[in-house]
Amino acid sequence: MTEENKKRIPLWLYPSTLESIDRWQEQDNCKSRSEFVEKAVRFYCGYISAGDAMGFLPTAITSAVSGAVDASENRTARLLFKLSVEMSIMMNILAANVDVDETTLRRLRGKCVEDVKRSVGTVHFEDVFRFQKER
Image 1 (spheres, rainbow, N blue to C red):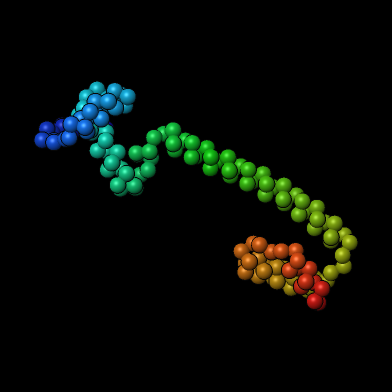
Image 2 (tube, rainbow, N blue to C red):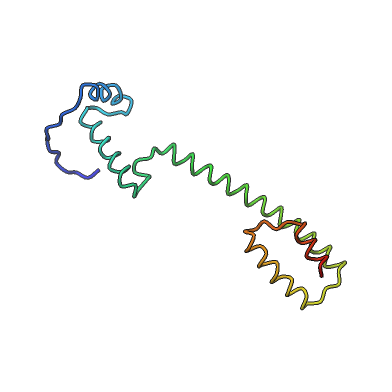
């Protein structure tokens, strides 16, 4: 916090609010009601502006959320790696045993890209099977 002079202002609070301040100021390591109110006002201003969430969210919460996101990202990366290995095995087996010319392969790639885009990644084997049988 910058070095600036504090100003005294009249402040009217309900007795129940003062009781809350007295009850919580020690737990928040505040030496006075004034310090507690100062922290509360800064917190509330940060909450309203929401421009800098780190300014008013406790470090424990941001650390927990960050940890959860990191763990999820790591799990997803591992699963994608495993899936890529399995796909590579499958493609190598198919390429070794199926005779497809380059023109057909290029057209099939274009069709598959369009299918995945249209279905937002949910291509079903049954649909592919029907398409191949219709040819």
